[in-house]
Image (cartoon, rainbow, N blue to C red; front, side, top):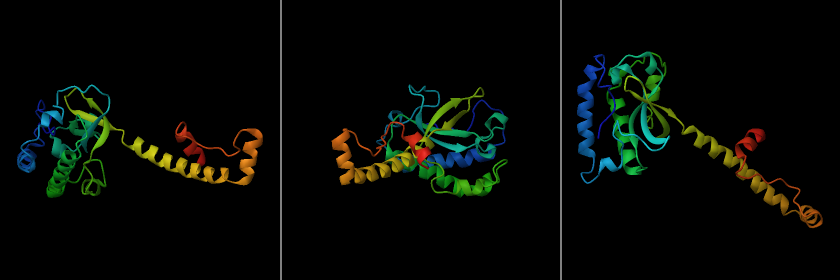
Amino acid sequence: MTLMYYNESSEDESGSEYDELREDETMNYYNESSEDEDEEDIMYEPDEPSPTKYNIVLCEIYNNKIHGVNRDALINQYMVVATFKHFDVAYLNRMSRFYNRSYVNKINKITPHSCIRNYTHIITRPNYVKPEIAHSIRLEGGEQVCIIKTFWIRLIQRAWKRVFRERQYGVRRRGNPRSLMNRQLTGTWATRMPSIKGMLLFSNTAS
């Protein structure tokens, strides 16, 4: 398994003091991992193309003290740590814990951030590095960054909760004798019942 923290083609040595720390942590990760796991079946190699546009990834905010390269194109970008072929919960949780611990253990060496004021608060969250659905992009310098798309799932979840509440309310109203009489006379329900189709639009208008 290759841990993508450094651009190997870069001659910038700004992250050299951090290389040894990352190597030690990598060895600790291997010691924690099960010997019978075939990582090639779980993760993509750095240069291995993915057949899909979106993948499950672990990513972290760019920090020149970690990634060892200074480029304006990387500022405020999410650097890809690893890309996964399928959702192995146990494996993902173990890797996430490993990276989150590494941030807490080396916080004094990687802070403050050059651009982000609350960087320390962000990286000390227990779920800072976590599985994300993302679109990965390889830059001209060889660095792999990503655009996180997981927030769309959260939007859909919130929208469906609103739609579900409205549907429950509609069911109760349809049980009203007046609604039943209207259905018998007209053949249609007077109460609107939202569905999955168009639920994001309904959610926005309802809120």
